Image 1 (cartoon, rainbow, N blue to C red):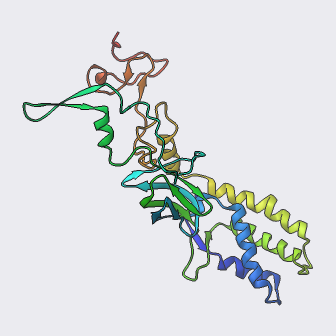
Image 2: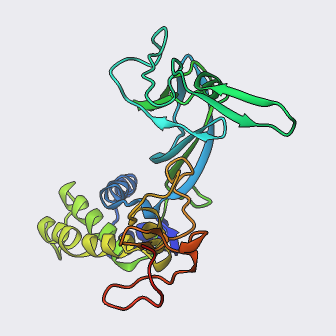
Image 3: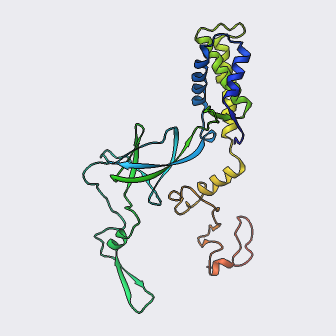
Length: 290
């Protein structure tokens, strides 16, 4: 995991000092080559979390400038799921395939009220009571976000490149990462015609591709203990956390212990709540319920 960052200007200065370059025309090319190397080594852990509200008109909206990874889309206080069928979103009327809560279901649910009256609700009323239509979706296409609804606004959560006060990208303050950028830039300078009296193009590119770039990527992608705990609580589970996708993977607790003998979740209310967790190969502290 990477926590400290520095400006790309440090690598640019290192290239100019070490190569003793005299031709100023290479300066603009150095910027482009460094951006290329960053794009080759880029991981989502080097990016900054951002969000932006986007207006939707005629089913389309422009994606934020600088977006590299799309983390999620929010619409009317709920997560908007990604679609992607062959039928265009702007088609005259969307198609719905209802499975569980069918509008034609004959099920009637009895609900108790505070008074003496009883309320009977059908599945159709439950569908109408949704805060937004459960079948809305989005998909991206060439710099735009396309939605199943024609008008409105969405909040896009994404990751973009960090920049300093001068607009230069912020890079991880990792020595292997900075050395990888340096060696890639030096190899590109040789390929553009600059005469290097110490190294060849192949030697410089091997320093980037074979040594420093793999080291930098491995160091940046290595998760911290907190990141690993979050991943375990979210994905490494016997039963997925309820609503883990809709709440943007905000899982704040681990999975409870289950009795593998088929008695259900340990620690629940009732008789099972009094049991101690069962560990394979040991004797239970009290008889298990039959």
